[in-house]
Image (cartoon, rainbow, N blue to C red; front, side):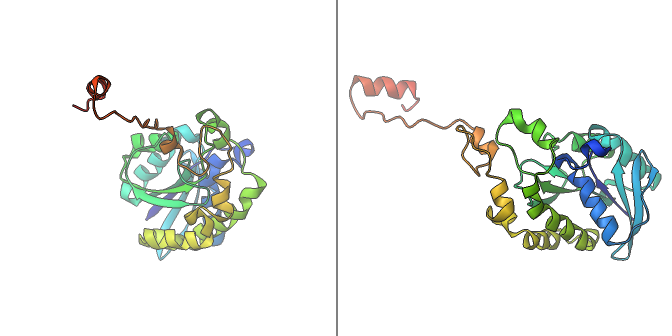
Length: 245
């Protein structure tokens, strides 16, 4: 048995938020593969079905994002499952919109839902990171994450969700590379930085940030080029100050 958890916040207020793309992906899988109607258990909405011949439980925690681990942990303990039996779908700021990457374990990367899961179930579960892009300015992150997807985002979001649902059996079989390849074909711009998804990642025009450059790299201070004279008293002083001796 496999548990696939889509992360998000409950309620219509948050339904179209970028932070809820995990919920959206879980809903798409349930629709495509005729899972059972959603019901309430484990402080979550759950639906069951079969993918690639294996029983799958879809879980959408209703504890709000920051307490996601309480719900998912309860489901795993009830079914006597380990972190290896868990796949989590969630939003990732550090990936361009529409780009998807999968990894097992690792840090929370500032994502409170993942931090909660790590605390409640351990770290050795598969993480399907769905890119929503970064606004480019730290102070804008909160509003970006809890803001709704723009109409223009539908150009990449809808085909991506369709592709996640269509190829969900590859996740169950453990074919993570094949799954990512299928998704990159569905949203080509996400892989190359062009097309609707790639362009969406470069819409913020901040004088202190280069468009399309990772906000992490951009935040690193640039080294100033200092030309040191080759000889003379000034050269000796500068070499001493700069540690060139």
